[in-house]
Structures are given as structure tokens and as C-alpha cells.
Length: 180
Length: 180
Image 1 (cartoon, chains in turn green, purple):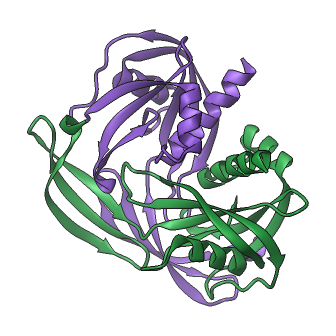
Image 2 (cartoon, chains in turn orange, green; image 1 turned 135 degrees about the vertical axis):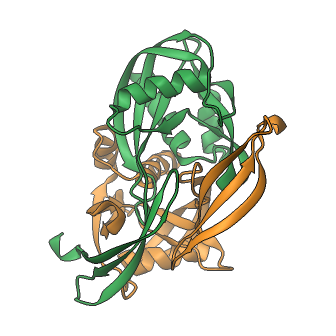
Image 3 (cartoon, one colour; image 1 turned 30 degrees about the vertical axis):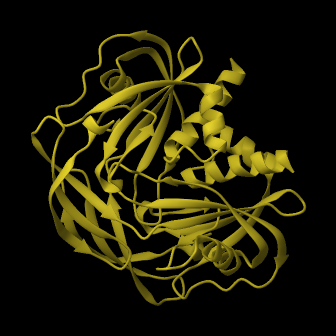
């Protein structure tokens, strides 16, 4: 696949925010021509798949400014520098939902949109859950909802899940529940 | 869920590239405090799930500058203004892979990363395939690979699929093939 590779000629920072950095990169294409690429740099994140003893998937409702709506998603959060994803997964699950997981296991990871962003999302399967208290970040407002896993699968097939990581989370919950 | 909503106080454009626009938004939180949000505006895209008569999923290898690697993905492409997603799906599939689909059907759509981007990805199921010629855009270099659907499922479970839309694509192919 070497002949597909683009060589970076230059990379100019265009924006640095609190969450993302944006660069405009100039690349040499495989045929020797040049082209430009918009690139978003993101710290990476974790998403947590947690199913209760009653076979309910733990979900959160949260307002998302970029899409101007309250979404239904599996719990997720940003990686902090130097933090192992497992700790992030445990912390975010407990902060957002009040559930503490004694055990988390990385399932796999994937790019959310590699055409313009380097964001990698690591998926964790959380087990041995215990209900504690929700304690979100200062600027974070979420509401927890538990939905029966079979109902989640039906919602997925019916197009009622509007968040890609949550689609994958439901698939993981199915895989893991079937294996248990 | 009304009490979760953030009210926009202002939105400042920070970058406008060829693909994305970036704004820094100031919002009023549900508790009356203010906070800032980095927001990426994206035109939206389609992803195409196409399985050949031999039960092979059509995939493409492509260099992705943001992640600096050649990825394995289902075919995908940007929506053009005013274009119905079905036409985009047919066009991108044929351009990138050479396969013409007589029929495409929207399965569902989802946000790729609603915490910072408004990108919506529409998933299409393409059928009645006919092999034509590949004819990519001028700055686009892709290699087609057909992989047996069962092998794709094994790759997914083994963590060898590194692109979220492709994970969802494999799930759709499973759903649709089982239903057929």
C-alpha cells in the first residue's frame, strides 16, 4: 500500500481551542501533485459499554452543542494526558452515571472520522457494577437512562440510535452478553 | 430533557477550510453559568455497505492524512450541497470501487463525534451490483479489496477493524444478509 501514501510538505496551525487543534496540511500525492488537507487533532476518548444485572444498557442523555440536540449515548469521555484508557473508562462511567465498575476491559478501538480527524475512540466493556453517586464535571449535565438490551437492539435496527459509538456499543453488548 | 439544554450566547468563526469550518461558541449552561465549546462544521457524508454475489464486503484501502496511515474502510464520501444521499452513495461506490449499484437504500444515520463535530454519516445498503471501471477524484488514491463477510466479522471481533463506520458497515451487512 506504499504507493497510496501522501507525504507532508507543511503543516500550519490554524486554531487551538480547549478541546481540538486544527491544522491545514499540504501534502504531496502519490502522483507527485500537491493537495491540501484540513486536519483536526483530538486527544482521543473512551466509550464505556456497561450492562446491569437486569440486562439493561446504561445510557446518558446529554446536550451536544455541535448538533444542537439532546442525544442518547453510551457514557464517554476524553483521555487525559498520560492516562491509561481503563482508568478513564472507570472514571467517566462513575462520574456520568453513578455506576462504579470493578472491572473494565478494552474491546477494541476505532477512528471516528479519519478523513479529517485523528480522534481514536477506545471501547471498554465494564462489569461488576455497583451503584454509587453521579458527580459530573462542572460544565457537564447528563441524565441517566437504563434501557433493556433487546430494546436497544430493536432501536438500532429501527434507526433510532443516532450516535455511531452507541451503535457500536450496542453491538459490543450483544457480543459480550452472548459470550457470557 | 429541556433542563439539559445549553443556550448559545455567541459563535465566532475561527477557521474555514476546504472541508470544515471551526467556530468557538459561548454557551449558557443549564445552571446559568457560561462555558466555551469548540465546534467543527462538516457537510455530512455517506458510507456504502455493498456485498457481492460471492458474499464479499467491498472495502477500500486509502491513506488518511489525519491519522497518517493507510486504513481499511467501507467506501464513503462527502455530501454535495443539495444532493440526495442516495445519489452520493451510488457515485462514491462507483468512483472508488468500480461497482455500480442499481439500488441503494438508506439504513440509518448517526453522528460520528457529536462532542465536537456536527458530522452526520448516512449509511446505505447497495444491491444489484455490476462491475464497471474505477474513476477516483483527482486527489484521491484508493485500492479495492473484497473480503468475505464472515472473515470481516472475525476481524471486527478480533479488533482488526480500526474505523468506526466500517464496524457499523459490517454489522449492517450481517443484518441485511441474515434478512435476505
